[in-house]
Length: 568
Image (tube, rainbow, N blue to C red):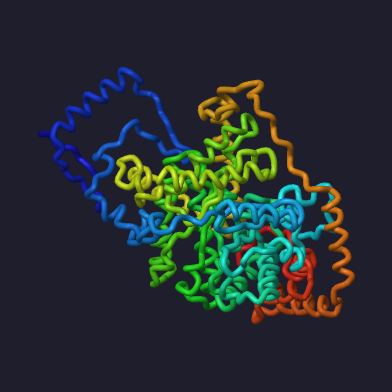
């Protein structure tokens, strides 16, 4: 009988009785070295070195309660609800944005018929830039998002969609005009705002500033003001809406490692929570409606470890740093989207396999909602056929593969528990860097976050270019002709888009100019009075017929646009 040493949850060395362990381990290491050599080093995307095998010396069941516990209980590693996917599976939320509102409506109704249980709306890039369709080149409108500039447009986009019954996500940076249009539609239809559920999916303006440079609309102080007012408004009027979605996805798609992504996201969440608390909001009044949005890369085990570690870190932050006492505030609720960065334009059908692997990682991670990419998304806006396959992928994994039968099926794995602990250490190191820089605003303002992302992106690209990281069809297993025709980039019907723009111009001449002018004046006054809720006036303006571009333009004049992040 021999004894192996391991670390206890408290960190002290313990002796574990494992008959024959040391002899068997020594024999294996000798055989392994003889066959593969000693110098083969493998690291994951976060830079953690991966051992060839994991044993009780790395993680023992003695650590179960400290590292794992049970689902719905501290430390929340295994999930935030007692039943997890065995009781209620994730929400299937497909991100859709194309053409005119009529084009969007046709697609979204088909997706719902195929089994999607929630919807998202992605606006045209002209919307992300804060301008109306009449100001953008016709040839570019609706090529990668839906042209929604008024409450009438939103009404058309959501025709026959039961707003009080289905969750919606608006990919809607500050000042949240899409959400304002949604509330206007609900008011028209007599749907109480208390029944509206969903998420302001792109409310994280810090991630927009860092990773989507061309998309931010307002100055940092302006966005900061509007977000806090948005949270306060939702607490009072739309209590089942999630006003804050911290977007790690942008950071990871820009090049951040999974560990960096989680660290940046958690640091951002702290910043937003503390902003709201500085305005007098109690942590237990706001944190239950904080959500997160992440990429799920093809680095399978690393992604699972990232989310398990992030879940227990957030529980500690909410409880110990932010002072939340309600267990609902400790829940790390996140949406996962399979990573488009991992998809390739070469041999695009291979992307179906990639998405299935990413989605499986997301399910094993314990996510609350998921979007699966279509296999042609590296090339174009998904076609109806490819979107159908993306939805079916989730259905197959849930219904046929039985991935929901067991909660946290990898829990207790020597590898996954060791990796989760290592990821937690690396995430905390990233957060310590941000804290030392003065918090997320200061770290972004100084360029620290951008530098870290850029360095990681360069390192990842070098691995692909040198062949260290294999990408099928790109740097290995290439074929000049794989027999699959490349999908053509999506373009909306030119005549339909032209008619949409002309109808928009007519709408502007026929609306009540008196109502529009009053709404804009009210918005200006709120922008310059800290005692007034500026987002409330955005909602009023949307219902009065003020357009997206006019709302953005007004707030840019009053709150600033294009300025660097400023630490207040």
